[in-house]
Length: 397
Image (tube, rainbow, N blue to C red; front, side, top):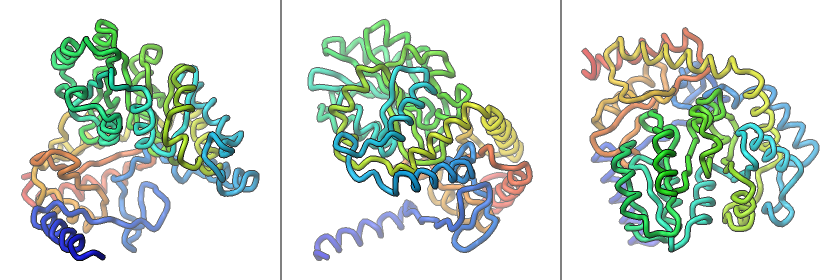
Protein backbone atom coordinates (compact mmCIF):
# COMPACT_ATOMS: atom_id res chain seq x y z
CA UNK A 1 0.00 0.00 0.00
CA UNK A 2 1.09 3.56 -0.66
CA UNK A 3 2.94 4.81 2.41
CA UNK A 4 1.04 8.11 2.71
CA UNK A 5 -2.30 6.28 2.50
CA UNK A 6 -1.15 3.66 4.99
CA UNK A 7 0.04 6.27 7.50
CA UNK A 8 -3.19 8.23 7.16
CA UNK A 9 -5.36 5.15 7.71
CA UNK A 10 -3.31 4.12 10.75
CA UNK A 11 -3.73 7.56 12.30
CA UNK A 12 -7.47 7.70 11.59
CA UNK A 13 -8.14 4.27 13.11
CA UNK A 14 -6.09 5.13 16.19
CA UNK A 15 -8.11 8.33 16.58
CA UNK A 16 -11.39 6.39 16.43
CA UNK A 17 -10.19 4.02 19.14
CA UNK A 18 -9.02 6.84 21.39
CA UNK A 19 -12.44 8.52 21.13
CA UNK A 20 -14.36 5.27 21.77
CA UNK A 21 -15.81 5.43 18.25
CA UNK A 22 -14.27 2.25 16.86
CA UNK A 23 -16.88 -0.36 15.97
CA UNK A 24 -16.32 -4.11 16.33
CA UNK A 25 -18.07 -6.33 13.80
CA UNK A 26 -20.01 -9.23 15.31
CA UNK A 27 -20.11 -12.41 13.23
CA UNK A 28 -23.23 -14.60 13.11
CA UNK A 29 -23.02 -18.29 12.25
CA UNK A 30 -26.71 -19.20 12.23
CA UNK A 31 -29.95 -18.03 10.62
CA UNK A 32 -31.26 -14.68 11.81
CA UNK A 33 -33.65 -15.63 14.59
CA UNK A 34 -34.60 -14.85 18.19
CA UNK A 35 -31.49 -16.66 19.43
CA UNK A 36 -28.39 -16.88 17.29
CA UNK A 37 -24.81 -18.11 17.25
CA UNK A 38 -22.39 -15.20 17.49
CA UNK A 39 -18.61 -15.44 17.65
CA UNK A 40 -18.95 -19.19 18.22
CA UNK A 41 -21.38 -18.71 21.15
CA UNK A 42 -24.77 -20.41 20.91
CA UNK A 43 -28.10 -19.15 22.21
CA UNK A 44 -27.42 -15.40 22.15
CA UNK A 45 -30.68 -13.41 22.39
CA UNK A 46 -30.78 -11.32 19.22
CA UNK A 47 -32.01 -7.75 19.74
CA UNK A 48 -29.94 -6.24 16.94
CA UNK A 49 -31.77 -7.42 13.84
CA UNK A 50 -34.22 -5.61 11.56
CA UNK A 51 -35.94 -8.97 10.96
CA UNK A 52 -39.16 -7.60 12.49
CA UNK A 53 -41.49 -10.42 11.47
CA UNK A 54 -39.03 -13.32 11.61
CA UNK A 55 -39.33 -13.98 7.88
CA UNK A 56 -35.59 -14.16 7.14
CA UNK A 57 -35.54 -17.87 8.01
CA UNK A 58 -39.14 -18.75 7.20
CA UNK A 59 -39.30 -22.17 5.47
CA UNK A 60 -41.82 -20.86 2.92
CA UNK A 61 -39.38 -18.19 1.76
CA UNK A 62 -36.58 -20.72 1.55
CA UNK A 63 -38.76 -23.07 -0.48
CA UNK A 64 -39.70 -20.25 -2.87
CA UNK A 65 -36.05 -19.30 -3.31
CA UNK A 66 -34.99 -22.90 -4.00
CA UNK A 67 -37.79 -23.35 -6.54
CA UNK A 68 -36.72 -20.15 -8.32
CA UNK A 69 -33.13 -21.35 -8.51
CA UNK A 70 -34.29 -24.60 -10.08
CA UNK A 71 -36.39 -22.71 -12.64
CA UNK A 72 -34.23 -19.64 -13.39
CA UNK A 73 -30.71 -20.38 -12.10
CA UNK A 74 -28.76 -18.37 -9.55
CA UNK A 75 -28.34 -15.07 -11.38
CA UNK A 76 -30.23 -12.73 -13.69
CA UNK A 77 -27.22 -12.31 -15.94
CA UNK A 78 -27.69 -8.65 -16.85
CA UNK A 79 -29.04 -5.29 -15.80
CA UNK A 80 -32.81 -4.95 -15.91
CA UNK A 81 -33.14 -2.88 -19.14
CA UNK A 82 -30.97 -5.24 -21.19
CA UNK A 83 -32.09 -8.81 -20.50
CA UNK A 84 -31.94 -9.03 -16.68
CA UNK A 85 -35.70 -8.72 -16.22
CA UNK A 86 -37.32 -12.10 -15.61
CA UNK A 87 -41.00 -12.83 -15.18
CA UNK A 88 -40.42 -13.20 -11.43
CA UNK A 89 -39.18 -9.58 -11.27
CA UNK A 90 -42.29 -8.32 -13.02
CA UNK A 91 -44.52 -10.42 -10.78
CA UNK A 92 -42.82 -8.94 -7.73
CA UNK A 93 -43.30 -5.35 -8.86
CA UNK A 94 -46.97 -5.98 -9.63
CA UNK A 95 -47.40 -7.58 -6.20
CA UNK A 96 -45.71 -4.66 -4.44
CA UNK A 97 -47.93 -2.13 -6.22
CA UNK A 98 -51.03 -4.06 -5.19
CA UNK A 99 -49.76 -4.41 -1.62
CA UNK A 100 -49.07 -0.68 -1.32
CA UNK A 101 -52.36 0.28 -3.04
CA UNK A 102 -50.59 2.33 -5.75
CA UNK A 103 -50.42 2.13 -9.54
CA UNK A 104 -46.90 0.75 -9.97
CA UNK A 105 -43.58 -0.12 -8.30
CA UNK A 106 -39.95 -0.57 -9.29
CA UNK A 107 -37.40 -2.68 -7.39
CA UNK A 108 -33.83 -1.61 -6.68
CA UNK A 109 -30.94 -3.64 -5.26
CA UNK A 110 -31.25 -2.02 -1.82
CA UNK A 111 -33.06 0.73 0.01
CA UNK A 112 -29.88 2.80 -0.18
CA UNK A 113 -29.72 2.43 -3.97
CA UNK A 114 -33.43 3.23 -4.23
CA UNK A 115 -32.75 6.64 -2.67
CA UNK A 116 -29.69 7.04 -4.89
CA UNK A 117 -31.88 6.18 -7.86
CA UNK A 118 -35.03 8.17 -7.30
CA UNK A 119 -33.90 11.51 -5.81
CA UNK A 120 -31.41 12.55 -8.54
CA UNK A 121 -33.83 11.28 -11.20
CA UNK A 122 -36.72 13.56 -10.22
CA UNK A 123 -34.82 16.70 -9.20
CA UNK A 124 -33.16 19.26 -11.48
CA UNK A 125 -31.06 22.38 -10.91
CA UNK A 126 -34.33 24.37 -11.00
CA UNK A 127 -35.69 22.55 -7.92
CA UNK A 128 -35.26 22.45 -4.15
CA UNK A 129 -35.22 19.51 -1.72
CA UNK A 130 -36.49 20.13 1.82
CA UNK A 131 -35.34 17.38 4.18
CA UNK A 132 -35.92 16.46 7.84
CA UNK A 133 -32.91 17.00 10.08
CA UNK A 134 -32.75 13.33 11.14
CA UNK A 135 -33.32 11.67 7.78
CA UNK A 136 -31.37 8.50 7.03
CA UNK A 137 -27.88 8.64 5.53
CA UNK A 138 -29.16 7.19 2.25
CA UNK A 139 -31.52 10.16 1.84
CA UNK A 140 -28.67 12.56 2.58
CA UNK A 141 -26.47 10.87 0.00
CA UNK A 142 -29.30 10.74 -2.53
CA UNK A 143 -29.75 14.49 -2.11
CA UNK A 144 -26.01 15.10 -2.54
CA UNK A 145 -26.04 13.09 -5.78
CA UNK A 146 -28.37 15.68 -7.31
CA UNK A 147 -25.45 18.11 -7.36
CA UNK A 148 -27.63 20.87 -5.90
CA UNK A 149 -25.82 23.45 -3.74
CA UNK A 150 -26.53 23.50 0.00
CA UNK A 151 -28.95 26.42 -0.35
CA UNK A 152 -31.15 24.23 -2.55
CA UNK A 153 -31.09 21.43 0.02
CA UNK A 154 -32.44 23.17 3.15
CA UNK A 155 -33.02 21.10 6.28
CA UNK A 156 -35.96 21.64 8.59
CA UNK A 157 -35.79 20.94 12.31
CA UNK A 158 -36.80 17.40 13.19
CA UNK A 159 -40.60 17.00 12.91
CA UNK A 160 -40.98 20.77 13.39
CA UNK A 161 -43.82 21.93 11.15
CA UNK A 162 -43.11 25.62 11.73
CA UNK A 163 -39.57 25.03 10.51
CA UNK A 164 -40.86 23.10 7.48
CA UNK A 165 -43.31 25.87 6.63
CA UNK A 166 -40.54 28.46 6.85
CA UNK A 167 -38.51 26.42 4.34
CA UNK A 168 -41.49 26.18 2.01
CA UNK A 169 -42.15 29.93 2.20
CA UNK A 170 -38.51 30.79 1.52
CA UNK A 171 -38.25 28.51 -1.50
CA UNK A 172 -41.39 29.31 -3.50
CA UNK A 173 -39.32 30.56 -6.44
CA UNK A 174 -38.16 27.07 -7.44
CA UNK A 175 -39.94 25.07 -10.11
CA UNK A 176 -40.45 21.98 -7.93
CA UNK A 177 -40.29 21.62 -4.15
CA UNK A 178 -39.70 18.11 -2.84
CA UNK A 179 -40.19 17.36 0.87
CA UNK A 180 -38.43 14.20 2.00
CA UNK A 181 -38.91 12.48 5.35
CA UNK A 182 -38.38 9.12 6.93
CA UNK A 183 -41.64 7.45 7.88
CA UNK A 184 -40.09 5.91 10.99
CA UNK A 185 -36.78 7.40 12.10
CA UNK A 186 -34.27 4.59 12.35
CA UNK A 187 -32.31 5.67 15.42
CA UNK A 188 -35.05 7.06 17.67
CA UNK A 189 -38.05 5.03 16.52
CA UNK A 190 -40.41 8.00 16.30
CA UNK A 191 -42.93 8.50 13.49
CA UNK A 192 -43.06 11.41 11.05
CA UNK A 193 -46.13 13.68 11.42
CA UNK A 194 -47.21 12.75 7.93
CA UNK A 195 -50.71 14.30 7.98
CA UNK A 196 -49.23 17.70 8.86
CA UNK A 197 -46.47 17.33 6.25
CA UNK A 198 -48.98 16.48 3.54
CA UNK A 199 -51.22 19.40 4.54
CA UNK A 200 -48.32 21.84 4.22
CA UNK A 201 -47.17 20.27 0.98
CA UNK A 202 -50.59 20.72 -0.58
CA UNK A 203 -50.82 24.27 0.73
CA UNK A 204 -47.48 25.23 -0.85
CA UNK A 205 -47.72 23.02 -3.96
CA UNK A 206 -44.86 20.70 -2.97
CA UNK A 207 -44.32 17.01 -3.64
CA UNK A 208 -43.79 14.55 -0.77
CA UNK A 209 -41.43 11.59 -0.63
CA UNK A 210 -41.40 9.19 2.29
CA UNK A 211 -38.64 6.69 3.06
CA UNK A 212 -40.57 3.93 4.78
CA UNK A 213 -37.77 1.45 5.39
CA UNK A 214 -38.73 0.95 9.05
CA UNK A 215 -42.46 1.45 8.52
CA UNK A 216 -42.72 -1.35 5.95
CA UNK A 217 -44.09 -4.45 7.63
CA UNK A 218 -44.53 -2.54 10.89
CA UNK A 219 -47.13 0.23 10.54
CA UNK A 220 -50.46 0.21 8.74
CA UNK A 221 -50.85 -3.53 9.21
CA UNK A 222 -47.54 -3.90 7.38
CA UNK A 223 -48.27 -1.58 4.45
CA UNK A 224 -46.34 1.28 6.00
CA UNK A 225 -46.63 4.78 7.36
CA UNK A 226 -48.66 6.25 4.48
CA UNK A 227 -51.28 3.52 4.90
CA UNK A 228 -51.12 3.93 8.69
CA UNK A 229 -52.34 7.51 8.20
CA UNK A 230 -54.58 6.64 5.19
CA UNK A 231 -52.50 8.95 3.01
CA UNK A 232 -51.30 6.51 0.36
CA UNK A 233 -53.15 8.46 -2.34
CA UNK A 234 -51.54 11.77 -1.33
CA UNK A 235 -47.87 10.75 -1.19
CA UNK A 236 -45.97 11.24 -4.45
CA UNK A 237 -43.05 8.88 -3.78
CA UNK A 238 -42.98 5.95 -1.37
CA UNK A 239 -39.74 4.12 -0.71
CA UNK A 240 -39.87 0.71 0.93
CA UNK A 241 -37.32 -1.90 1.86
CA UNK A 242 -37.29 -5.64 1.25
CA UNK A 243 -34.40 -6.17 3.67
CA UNK A 244 -36.00 -5.61 7.06
CA UNK A 245 -39.52 -6.82 7.90
CA UNK A 246 -39.75 -8.56 4.52
CA UNK A 247 -36.69 -10.55 5.51
CA UNK A 248 -34.80 -10.71 2.21
CA UNK A 249 -32.95 -7.96 0.32
CA UNK A 250 -33.68 -4.90 -1.77
CA UNK A 251 -35.62 -1.68 -1.92
CA UNK A 252 -38.41 -0.30 -4.07
CA UNK A 253 -40.21 2.85 -5.10
CA UNK A 254 -44.01 2.84 -5.25
CA UNK A 255 -46.15 5.51 -6.86
CA UNK A 256 -48.00 6.36 -10.03
CA UNK A 257 -47.20 4.96 -13.47
CA UNK A 258 -45.52 8.15 -14.70
CA UNK A 259 -43.00 8.08 -11.85
CA UNK A 260 -42.17 4.41 -12.29
CA UNK A 261 -41.88 4.69 -16.06
CA UNK A 262 -39.44 7.60 -15.63
CA UNK A 263 -37.33 5.63 -13.14
CA UNK A 264 -37.08 2.78 -15.63
CA UNK A 265 -35.56 5.33 -18.01
CA UNK A 266 -33.37 7.33 -15.61
CA UNK A 267 -32.93 5.48 -12.30
CA UNK A 268 -29.18 4.85 -12.46
CA UNK A 269 -28.94 1.86 -10.06
CA UNK A 270 -31.77 0.22 -12.02
CA UNK A 271 -30.00 0.96 -15.31
CA UNK A 272 -26.46 0.02 -14.34
CA UNK A 273 -26.61 -2.73 -11.66
CA UNK A 274 -27.35 -6.39 -12.32
CA UNK A 275 -30.88 -7.43 -11.39
CA UNK A 276 -31.67 -9.30 -8.21
CA UNK A 277 -31.04 -13.05 -8.33
CA UNK A 278 -34.37 -14.75 -9.10
CA UNK A 279 -34.26 -16.50 -5.72
CA UNK A 280 -34.38 -13.10 -4.00
CA UNK A 281 -37.39 -11.94 -6.01
CA UNK A 282 -39.24 -15.21 -5.40
CA UNK A 283 -38.54 -15.12 -1.66
CA UNK A 284 -39.84 -11.55 -1.46
CA UNK A 285 -43.01 -12.58 -3.29
CA UNK A 286 -43.56 -15.30 -0.68
CA UNK A 287 -42.95 -12.82 2.13
CA UNK A 288 -45.48 -10.29 0.80
CA UNK A 289 -48.06 -13.06 0.50
CA UNK A 290 -47.48 -14.00 4.15
CA UNK A 291 -47.72 -10.38 5.28
CA UNK A 292 -51.05 -10.03 3.45
CA UNK A 293 -52.60 -13.21 4.79
CA UNK A 294 -51.17 -13.54 8.31
CA UNK A 295 -51.86 -10.33 10.29
CA UNK A 296 -51.03 -12.20 13.51
CA UNK A 297 -47.32 -11.70 12.77
CA UNK A 298 -47.67 -7.93 12.86
CA UNK A 299 -49.84 -8.15 15.97
CA UNK A 300 -47.23 -10.30 17.73
CA UNK A 301 -44.54 -7.75 16.83
CA UNK A 302 -46.51 -5.01 18.58
CA UNK A 303 -47.33 -7.18 21.61
CA UNK A 304 -43.64 -7.87 22.09
CA UNK A 305 -42.79 -4.22 21.51
CA UNK A 306 -45.13 -3.04 24.25
CA UNK A 307 -43.84 -5.69 26.66
CA UNK A 308 -40.21 -4.83 25.94
CA UNK A 309 -40.61 -1.07 26.31
CA UNK A 310 -42.56 -1.45 29.54
CA UNK A 311 -39.90 -3.77 30.98
CA UNK A 312 -37.03 -1.42 30.18
CA UNK A 313 -38.82 1.55 31.72
CA UNK A 314 -39.61 -0.41 34.89
CA UNK A 315 -35.92 -1.23 35.26
CA UNK A 316 -35.07 2.46 34.96
CA UNK A 317 -33.80 2.89 31.41
CA UNK A 318 -34.58 5.89 29.21
CA UNK A 319 -36.05 4.78 25.86
CA UNK A 320 -36.25 8.25 24.37
CA UNK A 321 -39.11 9.22 22.08
CA UNK A 322 -39.68 5.83 20.46
CA UNK A 323 -43.17 4.98 19.18
CA UNK A 324 -42.24 1.80 17.28
CA UNK A 325 -40.29 -1.45 17.79
CA UNK A 326 -37.04 0.53 17.39
CA UNK A 327 -36.27 1.05 21.08
CA UNK A 328 -33.14 3.02 21.99
CA UNK A 329 -31.64 2.65 25.45
CA UNK A 330 -30.13 6.08 25.95
CA UNK A 331 -26.76 6.47 27.66
CA UNK A 332 -25.60 9.66 25.91
CA UNK A 333 -21.99 8.58 26.42
CA UNK A 334 -19.92 6.78 23.79
CA UNK A 335 -17.61 4.93 26.20
CA UNK A 336 -20.51 3.74 28.39
CA UNK A 337 -22.47 2.64 25.36
CA UNK A 338 -19.63 0.49 24.04
CA UNK A 339 -19.08 -0.93 27.53
CA UNK A 340 -22.79 -1.73 27.83
CA UNK A 341 -22.76 -3.56 24.50
CA UNK A 342 -19.87 -5.74 25.70
CA UNK A 343 -21.45 -6.34 29.11
CA UNK A 344 -24.72 -7.41 27.46
CA UNK A 345 -22.90 -9.81 25.17
CA UNK A 346 -21.21 -11.32 28.22
CA UNK A 347 -24.73 -11.82 29.59
CA UNK A 348 -25.85 -13.53 26.38
CA UNK A 349 -27.62 -10.65 24.63
CA UNK A 350 -26.66 -8.97 21.36
CA UNK A 351 -27.79 -5.33 21.19
CA UNK A 352 -25.87 -2.83 19.13
CA UNK A 353 -24.10 0.33 20.27
CA UNK A 354 -25.06 3.33 18.14
CA UNK A 355 -22.47 6.10 18.34
CA UNK A 356 -21.15 9.03 16.33
CA UNK A 357 -21.31 9.54 13.35
CA UNK A 358 -24.51 7.48 13.12
CA UNK A 359 -25.96 9.76 15.82
CA UNK A 360 -24.72 13.10 17.09
CA UNK A 361 -22.01 13.23 19.74
CA UNK A 362 -23.52 12.93 23.20
CA UNK A 363 -26.54 11.03 21.83
CA UNK A 364 -25.07 7.51 22.04
CA UNK A 365 -27.43 4.65 22.75
CA UNK A 366 -27.94 0.91 22.56
CA UNK A 367 -30.56 0.28 19.89
CA UNK A 368 -32.81 -2.69 20.63
CA UNK A 369 -35.18 -4.33 18.16
CA UNK A 370 -37.86 -6.65 19.57
CA UNK A 371 -39.56 -8.75 16.91
CA UNK A 372 -42.48 -11.09 16.32
CA UNK A 373 -40.14 -14.07 16.67
CA UNK A 374 -39.14 -13.41 20.29
CA UNK A 375 -40.78 -15.43 23.06
CA UNK A 376 -41.54 -13.90 26.44
CA UNK A 377 -38.68 -15.98 27.83
CA UNK A 378 -36.29 -14.40 25.29
CA UNK A 379 -37.39 -10.93 26.34
CA UNK A 380 -37.24 -11.72 30.05
CA UNK A 381 -33.70 -13.08 29.69
CA UNK A 382 -32.75 -9.88 27.89
CA UNK A 383 -34.38 -7.64 30.51
CA UNK A 384 -32.45 -9.41 33.27
CA UNK A 385 -29.23 -8.94 31.29
CA UNK A 386 -29.92 -5.24 30.83
CA UNK A 387 -30.62 -4.82 34.53
CA UNK A 388 -27.39 -6.54 35.56
CA UNK A 389 -25.25 -4.77 32.99
CA UNK A 390 -26.84 -1.38 33.64
CA UNK A 391 -26.25 -1.60 37.37
CA UNK A 392 -22.70 -2.85 36.90
CA UNK A 393 -21.86 0.19 34.76
CA UNK A 394 -23.78 2.65 36.92
CA UNK A 395 -26.25 3.55 34.16
CA UNK A 396 -29.23 2.63 36.37
CA UNK A 397 -29.52 2.44 40.15
